[in-house]
Length: 296
Ligand SMILES: Nc1ncnc2c1ncn2[C@@H]1O[C@H](COP(=O)(O)OP(=O)(O)O)[C@@H](O)[C@H]1O
Ligand SMILES: [Mg+2]
Picture 1 (tube, rainbow, N blue to C red):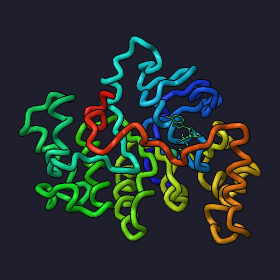
Picture 2: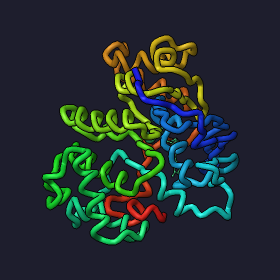
Picture 3: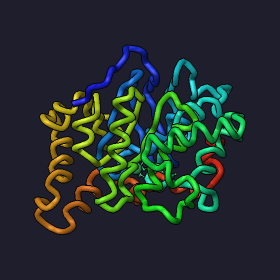
Picture 4: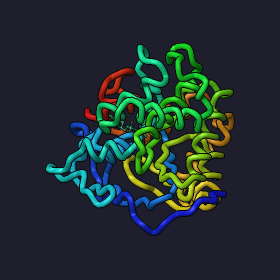
């Protein structure tokens, strides 16, 4: 059970958010809000629009219509200073997107210096304190290629935290990791949640969602099908689509025949172009400056 404090203050408001890629309407009207200190986990099948939803929150994707307000600033207003809004939103991706040619410490300071305009000494102090938070202070001189995937992801979290964000967005942060490396990353996220960080987490880790989330959103086909306390959405889902999804995720071997998943996928995406699976980082290659400077 989540033990952290959720305030009544709204940090993000999403109102009738829609997003189409050409003819393919991926988000069909999403309305929800996130409160200060709240941990919201988004679950749902591949291709249901989870990553697109998250990326619309900081305009990594430009919504087709609808409104997103972050901390009182309407990010969907063309006049909004999106770089400033992005600097307040830490983002952690499935692929860690660290700069391979920079040390762990430099990965954690570069955006502080270039975007936050911190001086180097301050930036290094903050970076070290966040590396300590994720248990990697002893790796500050290492390069990403010398670290395990789990360690790289923890560096990516330390890097995001070093910007002192108001909230953190995570897009399947453990999906690219070997199973034995998942636990350390989830522990770091669990600790962040208990410290009061506002977190929006797309994940397939149902145990994490159940234990840590204040609220779970189940998405399918570009809609929020149901949302609520994890004991309800995961423990006692009301909708057939939620039950079917959870059944597939929680009992993967119970899908009677090979290819059953493919059929279910095709059914949900009738008349849509071939989806590229979790094509959520397609526009962001490792080491691309936009990642760190959040100025894409
Ligand atoms: N940049 C893009 N261009 C075109 N189609 C996209 C793009 N990003 C995502 N899509 C499509 O949007 C749908 C939802 O994708 P996504 O938000 O990544 O789903 P999820 O994260 O739930 O797996 C998919 O059909 C995907 O192919
Ligand atoms: Mg995705």
